[in-house]
Image (cartoon, rainbow, N blue to C red; front, side, top):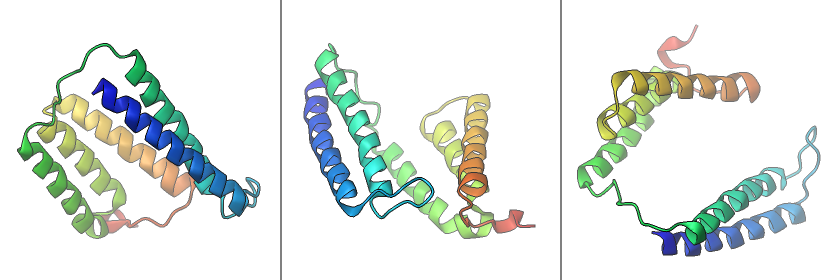
Length: 147
């Protein structure tokens, strides 16, 4: 995997550079009045930093770790969990469905303990609420928790 990380990191670094250039070409605007290239530019910037980290990790890494996702059952469970999320998000609401998705992935797919799974699921659902509802004021499905 170390050799593949080098190429993948390089590819995504070049792609991120292209996205940043196009974002600047579209116009960034300001934080108060973002232009059409604002989000693409910063998304490309984040992608570029992360892909350079992967590339650097590929050059500095010494050994390959075995893949943990060799079981096709795990892949099927993740796919079905995402399909379930899509089907339940309108009825249960985004926050509750996000909690259930993360808890399921950690407990069933990754076979982590109950305490860890629930704690991380609560943290992810809480962070989703803060970012999307309070900070961005996005209109996410409230579901059965609607007041």
